[in-house]
Length: 383
Ligand code: FES
Ligand SMILES: [Fe+2]
Image (tube, rainbow, N blue to C red; front, side):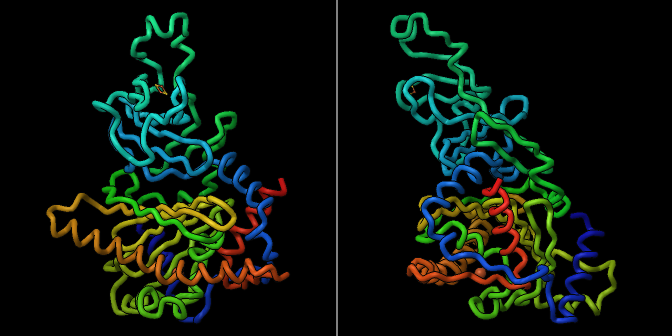
């Protein structure tokens, strides 16, 4: 969002605060409780949403330089994304053509000498374009083997508006504009290309990936669940909701937003007074707040277990150790709020859902984000 859009958003949020209301869905939605616990639906979701649907990987600055890579295997297919010498992104199935070891660990890093991957098992090496360039003892051990056919298996990867998406299934392709469906209007202009990657926190949770996502899609719970943390910073139950294809964006006013009434518009600093939860279907939230942004990516492990990766991106590299410590402390504090306050409660929600009682989960008109995720998911599974 550029400044004029940020100002427009601030005015909408001030109006919602004034009227003490929030964006509303058309009606109340009900979801069968079994949707959270059914092993059959879980298997369908893993295939339709995580294996056969384009996945948000991260902002461009996650892999800024030639040789920078990012590897993960939470979609069921091990994936390796790497920037080549020309600055172009490549993605491959992270499986060595010899006997199947992963070429890079699940994390971000630099290829060897910025140029190649060398398999940790028997040392076969591949360049940044996935070509097999070396087989130790190859002449005698692998005579007649066609190296040209043994490169890493390519995956479709797209980089646009500072965001990286990959299709895990090597048999499938996707249209990046259709996947984004306009959400770039909300998220571009925040420096996704050039922020500094502070790091990632991995948290395992003993509940459904969908319960995990649900916590991000409404601000209705702030005053009750977060009275001492988020509740002291942002209005409860006030959000400006916008839908973009399967994705959505929710603006949130800071409790200080009315201070702007006393200032001329030209002096407004919109980012200080609002934050944005941008949802990228099916499993990602890009949270834009103050001068930085965070990503939360949630993956299913089993119907009752999921894993979340919380990453922090700050405007520039900390100048000294004190600055580094301050950012890390802040990062930890935000993560702690989610883990102790949200996940601590959702853990118990999960137990209730698992009680085996026929029940509906009710999603209010004031929770359009929660409704959207479940509606999109139904739509895709039905298709
Ligand atoms: S599995 Fe990679 S070199 Fe053997
Ligand atoms: Fe929360």
